[in-house]
Length: 391
Ligand SMILES: C[S@@+](CC[C@H](N)C(=O)[O-])C[C@H]1O[C@@H](n2cnc3c(N)ncnc32)[C@H](O)[C@@H]1O
Ligand code: SF4
Image 1 (cartoon, rainbow, N blue to C red):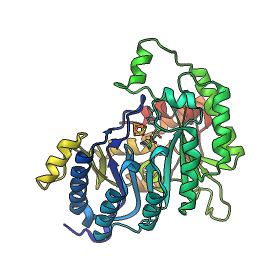
Image 2: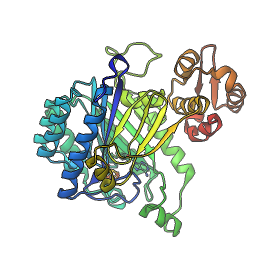
Image 3: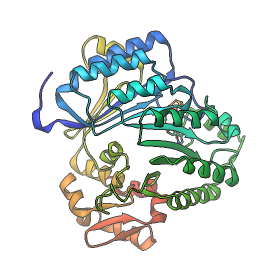
């Protein structure tokens, strides 16, 4: 284990590649869990943690997946003790993704005791019919029950994930879900339009003509989301992310709101991070690596003592700067020119001047003396904007 001292990486992502059942729309790398493979994965993950621990001093930790909450108490305790031994606990923000069907009071307490302080729960919808349509294993009742369990365990920073433009979803159903979710009073809300990912059952149904995509309705649903969330006291700080405004904890307007997900803000702002586990990506000192998206192979490599890296890429600085520009513009605050220059060594005003002018002309962007940001319309088309900044 090499100790990199002061320049250690402050952000750690851990991918748990297991789910109780695969949802119809999901392309994240995960598979239905089996006890044997989970044990092998945990040993391999511990080995990978040992390899990188000397280069890490996590300020943010994020367990994502897959479904981290499918791990049982004993499995969680094993992982958390291994992290404790390696001095990896104590992050300011420590998030764990959960499925409402796999939350329990014992698990919540254990996670809290080891310093987890934020839970992100996949709600998607509160319409039973749509939950079925999506292949979710949870019911609406489980959402309320799990939320309550997490609050009682002391979690005071909870995120709820929603999806909209689900096949068969009406505006009425979306409004009803939004109203109920906003009334739950979580600190954070993430809401994505359904993405039709290759090789998913939902994509196959779309291709087979079983339903159509109504782009106008999707846009109206997005507007409804932004409006209702704002009315309920949330501040939108990224295309799909909203944080509850807390005037006592707010610092300055230029910074993301207090309850913004600090881990994700680091991605959008082009920071370094380690990603461990199958399929996870790391970005450390200008080098991007990606682990094998295959749990067996991941375990085999680590059993031999090395990280299970499928690809390395040393990004040319301009290419990396273009990606950083594109990612950062997903944030409502846009890019302060000086911060961008400090992060990438490139100046948006010289390298991307014509793109910024073009976007401003179209009403998608706004240039001020010290910053470039997307307008409300621009944010809706952030993916198209991103293409313009890539080099
Ligand atoms: C890893 S899951 C969250 C935790 C847990 N696995 C669960 O689903 O309850 C991450 C989130 O990504 C979103 N998501 C996944 N696939 C998506 C897709 N194809 N389109 C839109 N959102 C998607 C869902 O909202 C989901 O909650
Ligand atoms: S959405 Fe969550 S629970 Fe469903 S398959 Fe994807 S990772 Fe698993």
